Length: 116
Length: 115
Image (tube, rainbow over all chains, first blue to last red; front, top):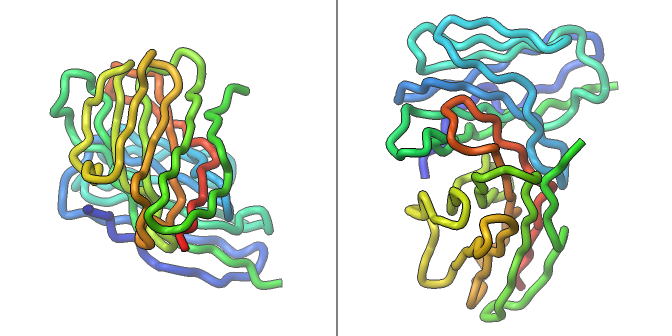
């Protein structure tokens, strides 16, 4: 199945550094979501974006919905050890069913590692 | 805080055997999803239910996979017979249902290893 392109695939940073990652698609999405997944657990929602150009923050996390509606960005400021994990973007296209809750297409993930 | 429950958390089976996974969504959530996540990749949707009805099963390998949500609450995903390539994490998610800007909440997943 289709997966969105996430970059970078992995990051090795020191505690306190800022982190930036992005997600691109060949299709237009009307919703972008960012999830974090710890080993052996399910993804946990971090930020949801619903409008092109929207910039939303959640603590040290900031995400943006790209103007073209084909990309999104996630930034983490002043990283801490608990930020370690895999970050997934997910996009949702316009509805094709009567229920309005369309399926999510996930990215390939960005693995964040913090070097002591 | 309400959570999506899944069991078992881990399952080891031999190929050609049957396996079943169970999911209990957040109470009141009408929409339920089953995803498969292969190691190193993002989750991919297998099947989506709205109440007890299947909304999307286009990516479900129907020759060996089946899913049901008989009373519109909990759900079971079955694989029969299991193949080596089925080794993956199987995630269940739920959302309230019916609105265009809904968040999907994921369970902890069932990690399947087929030997």
